[in-house]
Image (cartoon, rainbow, N blue to C red; front, side):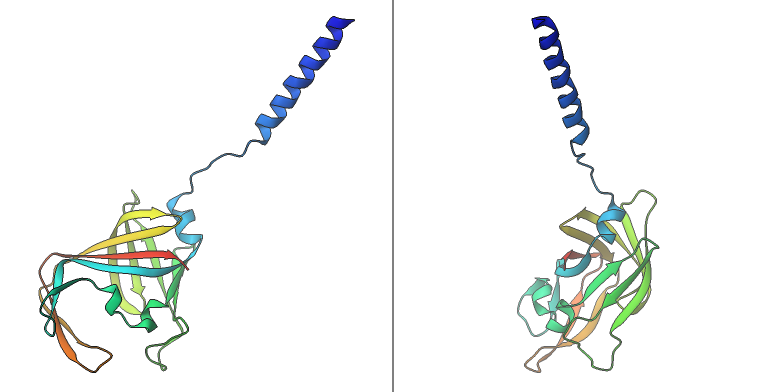
Length: 179
């Protein structure tokens, strides 16, 4: 009788262990597609190397993000599984007459080491970036700018205008975090 009772307990323990193993949650690593389409993304950094030259400053600037107007910093983008995206103006708009959102397309390269956008943030054309990092907490994209010379006139909040110049093969890095 004691042997049957022990066997019953042993079988119950095995069934319990099998049941617990079946309930164990899998730690599935999300794909790049799942990551990029799983959040709204907001830019948190913009850097360049080598530094750009700003005529009104006695030094080069590598960390561009602090110089961006707040009306750009609050924008965000949603990516969709059908290879489209929508970039939204945040609460602050740089130009009240501009659209509230811009749409375009995106695609990974076949090996998912780069991403190409069309009409990125309302700018016509195609832009390809190397993917430096893509996690659930951060997307880091890099593009080499091959142009040389004067890029734009920048006017800061005090009204001071400066010419922005870059060197050939400047690497521009954009970092995005979940909104």
